[in-house]
Image (cartoon, rainbow, N blue to C red; front, side, top):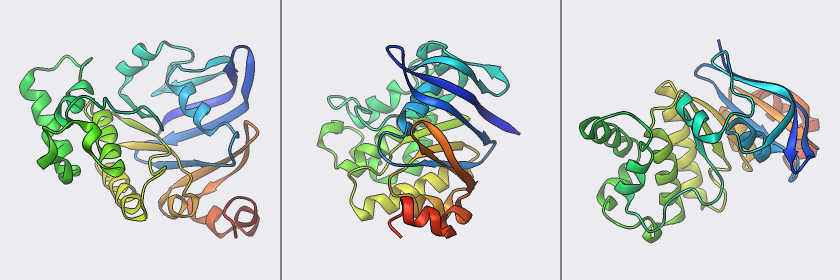
Length: 237
């Protein structure tokens, strides 16, 4: 079952198309990775799902409902969690307050919100002892845990991760990847843009390679990882 379908979309900003016919889909419980050179439209594709890009033609469907060009606040009601690459936490708020902000639009009581926060602390155990600390005091890897945890507070069916390991140490990169796999095993479908392409392809169910706002390659993660052409063009092989 396809949970997300992007169908031949053209779009961008200020009337200028950055996406030139992108199509992709995510099935329920899949991890799908998007790779490609800088400027290929990877992050713009993610933003288009969240209503942050003007889509001039084509369509985006989530669980068979058309969400093309819906306002961002409306898309949040569809249980789509989004972690942008930058500005993805409230630095002045505590870890716990950041998580609570992730549930701001849910019609849940305090006890339900606390129960959900407890699930986040079980996934990201290093945050538990720092729950009262301002997010600004955390390491880069810990801040990324907070960002992902906040997106998980809405109990999403689909989690969008834009470069979740950007700027992180190898240790935290490996840890974030481990958590991505763990979250997926809990039943959350994941669409991820990732610069550490080799590592991401090794556990991706499927992957897309974008170039100049267009689909260039599509296959299983392992097949793309084995491809000599992909290796030479995009993986430094």
